Length: 239
Image (cartoon, rainbow, N blue to C red; front, side, top):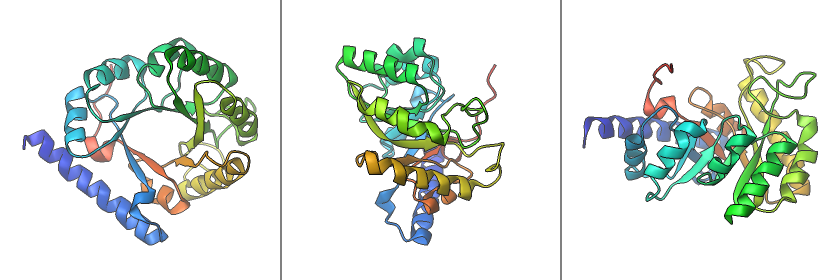
């Protein structure tokens, strides 16, 4: 093994132990939780190593980084998740490689994603990003729609050609009533997921938890955790 492959294998093993322990503590089976490795700021060579080590789900948050990386790794058996705030002028590019867009949070984005997915003949899985810190604007600091906006947006996604409503995503908020209360935030997301599935039974994905709080997410019932730093290391500063 190269030094980098040895490093990533060790980090993955540590994360795997954490997820397994969290599942056991919650009385869940390990296969109920999917690990998504967030590869933002890291090169395609790391994505290749991760694939060799068995990773099948990777995530990016900036199209200008993700598009060339996905193209360079197009031969690998990977599912690509887009998790960042998405501008409509980037939608055509993102639809070209993303299997899932986890940051759907407004009507215009649904319309743009549907148009491009339909044009490309692709089916794109959509998660509605929930902002548990949403203020009067109805949006959170890092994007997302307020809980009260989920039902309407879910209906739009479910009826849009080329799109599939797969579930909900959140990021533990830094402000508002859930700041510093990750477990409560993720429990709230699970309640919202239960409500969503009454109208849309197939929308079973719940994406929550990152390197620092994956255990709380698993305890709440998350089906997917998004882990970057704990696998790849501390990110280099951008710019």
